[in-house]
Length: 305
Length: 322
Image (cartoon, rainbow over all chains, first blue to last red; front, top):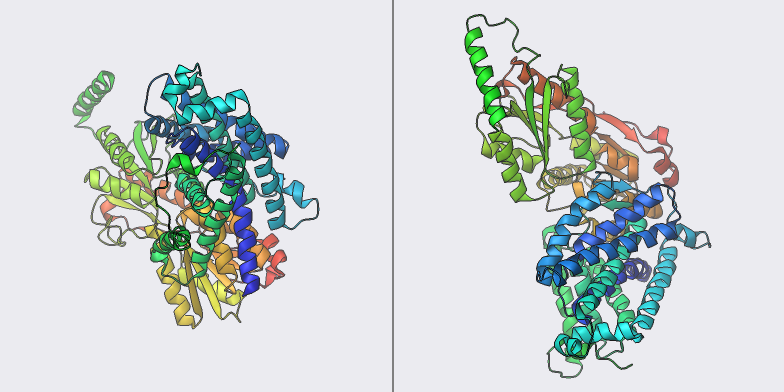
């Protein structure tokens, strides 16, 4: 039994670390910039498609993964331009990009709905060559990439541009009055966010061994759930610690799902079961010490730099 | 549009003039036939079915660019697209329309009662209300079913793991086709007297964890022809290889990517069979009303040798049960 749980935990960790980049991406737009961005559901499969096609063409896995990140940057740029230059509300701009990306991703995959990576070297093969098992290779590689991304983002948010971006999210009017080019900041935020999400898509495609045109459906929920779990369990973190905690949130979310799959519930009730388990997990901290339940967006990601 | 009306006008006039001297052949193969195609979503099996359909038409004497004009529509998995695309194909006065997979077939059947429809990759035409009965459709719909003999597949799995106490079944509960097949599989397993564990996943993103949860509890796994699980065949293969669990799947493609064996369907050949049926209708030799729904002619045992070796099973020991 304990063995099974350990296996579950390892599997959830390996998956969660790869999903954590999705959570980080969603966090950048949802919390830092205070925008609802649905582009995620389009940039996620795009990242998977770009990485997969590069690998099939024999490109080095690291370069293929970076190319996927680049694809996400472009997707974010489109949403950013729609939102800022054409004044389309962010939610709608994201939906427009997401819809268009379906065809772009299909093009990237040469009109196939599903491209298999069987027998191709992936970024995880590199870690397996260090003598690690498949799951451990994913955990090590996933952790390395997550740490690298969080590290770079922490450095970025200490620069003048990074601080300006955070100010834009906190108070757009005051930021503009103080000479920050808020439109440019939003566009940059959209880009980095979708870059991370496409990176997550690229890693998951390599872990799964296939890219799928329809894999973006419901991914934004996974990102949001990871964020909420992390914020409920660990309040008031500095921005770097917060982003690291998102990985924990993603792992816990995957673990919850794994536990639900372990339970013997009726197939049709599985979704309800995972919803209930999620409620229980999110409600638990409230039983320790009474708090007001205002999950305010800004005080949660309070900034102690 | 004007040109089309003009062409139709000229053709009609020509036909009226020729009215007296009709040829003895059912339909002249020199006239260009318009065939519309409506596919639910881009998907490896369905794409193959369409490819096979074109080959079947070719064998029946209809070649794209010569005497055949194809209008291919793909609804990208959205219900509202299905409706508007069905209307488009019907309004264009297609000579025949192909519906690939159940939702496309139903949408077309709801849109037209008179244009001949052929469908493929539909598991149960009668349950989907497309035909009155498989032997005698009784309306403008006929085609091929991708129903396989679930009993044969279950027997195959049980012959590979004769000592199994518990068998797992996994599918996407949101796919009507899969639900029908999974229920049949569960009934067959009950008859065989083994314990059954059923797991479902709605998206490819959950498939890995569902497979891991199931593989720890069972000695064999059955997957019906399910779009979600077929798409995720690669990761399923990795998990069952690691956990050393034999997996029998409904589709040949899935077994080739990440299963052990099946007695299954090759969608390209199924599409080809459908194309030949369509050619008969275009020839004027038959009407959908009277053409019995056809089952796949090409059911065959497929064994993934590489998977067998990984599980420590001799591929030659796997035989099709009687």
